[in-house]
Length: 73
Image (cartoon, rainbow, N blue to C red; front, side, top):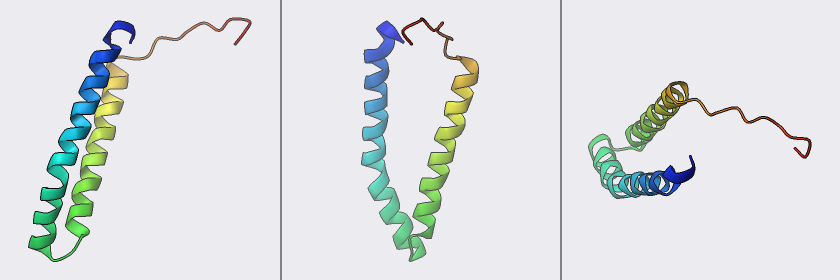
């Protein structure tokens, strides 16, 4: 990562903040429409699954380099 680390940290922070802004109103609308928390939990589960799929895809597209171990490791 090296030089790209600050940019990636900013992107992760922005993504986290966007979720915090969108999540509560979306959950409120889903609870009001359905009368329970099942739909909002299903939406959160789908978002988590989508994130996991994106993570796996990114790991396959850009694998982490294998670092040779030294005697101290």
